[in-house]
Image (tube, rainbow, N blue to C red):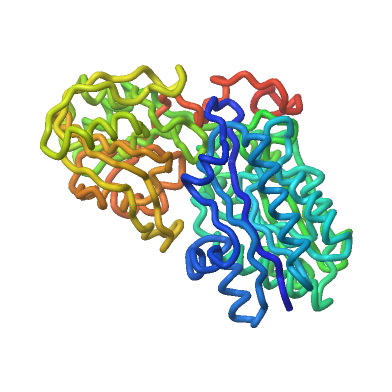
Length: 488
Ligand SMILES: [Zn+2]
């Protein structure tokens, strides 16, 4: 057996003013051909799972493109067309294929289009025809479209948030694709898109309404007639018609069963929709609460300034309050400010300088803060994720500096990346366990690796484009009525 394999991944926050162009993909991930296999083999990623499973089963792979950029604004038309052209050209020259494995996100919004993945799948179908099976892994935050469902043979969404099952989903997609090729299963699909737009911070799968839905899905998958069940929580900060929660059930040649199970999941999701609503204290309350905790470390989770949800990553309001209250033994991880990081690099380790940090991208993450501090550490920003998420994958934060301002250490990074791994703090010489307060710019992912090592977590309702306070945004394109934007 021989499968084509590629990744094109972006989560687009349509409220962001940062355009996602070729340069943004280059900064994060842009590889071609065999290089893809070498970079991802044995990593905790979808591609890693696909490659490992294919290798174990003696399935040959025809590698094409691996492209990913940090979540931000719409993908430029130029890059989207470039990626699509590359996929099409590689498919045409790939030689004989039995199937196509794609690692897509599901919430990519290119300029002039609502549905990036649907458009890529249409192009792929255009080359391989209607009969070639296509298996796709999608992020838990995919906003599923009719085209994605129709054009792919099988979709496999992550079942966890934090996303700790990416490799497992990659393996599953590979196994199921091989099953289809060999004629062992005949997928029949049911799909539901209830009028729900759950906020990000209410979507975690360790407890709450998504846990309930995935407990049901897990039970359903034990039935041998069921091929796969995905419940996508959706990405609410893409203001497109199809944004929101969706349900995808595949059975083996039993469409009635698929419809029935999809109905059950839809009914339960709808009945418990209010459990998705999320509230966090405002900045002053949250910081006061953190300073009063007896025990360390305390995480102030800056859930609204999560670059993994397309926020700028340079939000300043929590930092400003911590400085005002003279917090000590505190680390802010991590603030995206390439200009400040470079200024620190020019000044050198040990130098004292005065500069503005953060708040430079737009007016939705707080204003810049003027600080005077000492450069404590400089780094090229390379580290290796220890996981559980992205285990083994190299992270590149670009020129990185730790600026110490009184008792507050600010980790300044040059490439936008969510603080989801304590390694992002350790690699610049700070022991997260020893800090009194950690400001972590992440919505949910940080929980996988930080929960075991921290005393208390306090989520903060600070300004930012990954806010779970959806009242902060003006939605124009999402289908209405929809919960919770409308009182349903
Ligand atoms: Zn996600």
